[in-house]
Amino acid sequence: MSPGIVVLVVAAISAVGYVLGRRRAVSLAARERAKLHSLPGYYGQTVALFAAVPALVVLVAWLVVQPLLVETRVSDMIPDSAIPEGGARSLVMADVRRIADGLDAVLARGGISESELSQMQADVTDVRGLLAGIGVALGNDVPPPVFEAAKSYRQISKTGNIVAGALALALSVGFALWAYRRIAVDLRARNISERFVRALLVSASTIAILTTIGIIASLFFETYSFFKIYPARDFFFSTVWNPQFRGGSDLGILPLLWGTFYISLVALVVAVPLGLMIAIYLAEYAGPSVRSLVKPAIEVLAGIPTIVYGLFALVTVGPFLRDWIAQPLGLGNSSSSVLTAGIVMGIMIIPFVSSLSDDIINAVPQSLRDGSYALGATQSETIRQVVFPAALPGIVGAVLLAASRAIGETMIVVLGAGATARLSLNPFEAMTTVTVKIVSQLTGDTEFASPETLVAFALGLTLFVLTLGLNVLALYIVRKYREQYE
Image 1 (cartoon, helix red, strand yellow):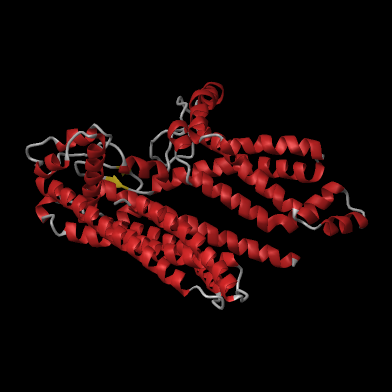
Image 2: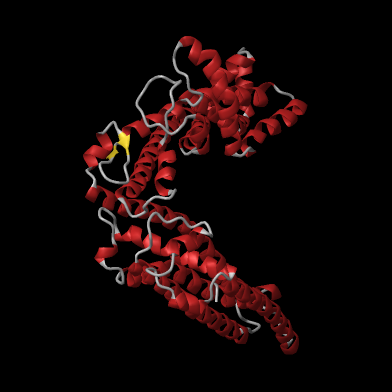
């Protein structure tokens, strides 16, 4: 019983409970000739909420707890001999999950039956070839213990989903009947409904916090496993990035960090001045008709897929920079370069700067402009000395958002800057970023349970810490300048 089906059934029970609860409240008021404490709709909402909320809480709790319970039990089935040298049990469990999901896909396609799957053995059946037919790539042949663990993972998860679904449906029906029988003319149904809504809002705000904690925890534990098998000093201070899946790897992050910040800097140099000038023109100079045409046209840039920008960099911008600037000046012969990716990425993030800055500039009180004009300032002087400083905190936020977008971009870098990790000041040379290497280390037909794959989590955690530091610095700058105008 899949969670999706259970949710649909619970929603149907809640809808029926709402109708019946409202009808019961109206009939009780008419029969007892008394006035209801709340509107009839609140009584229906009470029944619907009692029918839906406990059942959904059980389903969410099961989805959160299931990986911990199932993976702990299945992990104990994997012997130490099935873990590759230098690998980690958690990464072998990742292979177990991939195999289990692949087997579900094969069963859904009708390639095999459930009975055939139960009798299948890894040392007899080509499991790797079977899963490759549905797009699940495995680096090596599947060891028999791992395959048996994947089958157990499927069975335990399936049984758990059935139990959780049955419990959720039982709670939904039981609480709906209980809420229905509690309906009376003096029941404070509105208060009950409001408390449910408040609890829902608190839960929604908590989800964001828990999600952040979960992201940090998932990165931290895998990074800890990586640093147990690879020296942290070499990772943070080595200037060579040369991952070898057969040993002898050099995994220094410095070339990747340099490429990330170099490309992002070029993108910001392109986007920030253009974006701010566009925002100032639209907010202070353009008329309503011009603004209604220009602003949507600029915002279209934000809706273009990044792969299209990457193709534009590969086919147009890169060859132009190579043929007209790099080769005549003797600076390089490659169309993939930092400047190519930076310029195209800067064009992509212009709307992030211009649109947000435009809204922020428009939010500056008109009284500040009028006071400046009354003192004899021109329009340009008013913009430079009054409007822009007053809007500076918001503009810093817009630039920060654009920087975050640039740091996290992958496809433009792959097609525009290449995949070479190097330390160089030449903007016409190919380089790469942290995000590109995270993707390359986690994808492809390579061994997943290896230190070269664990390094992706260390890269992700390092990038997270650096961007967090930039956010804190930007927040400090915003507060410092905001105090001067409050």
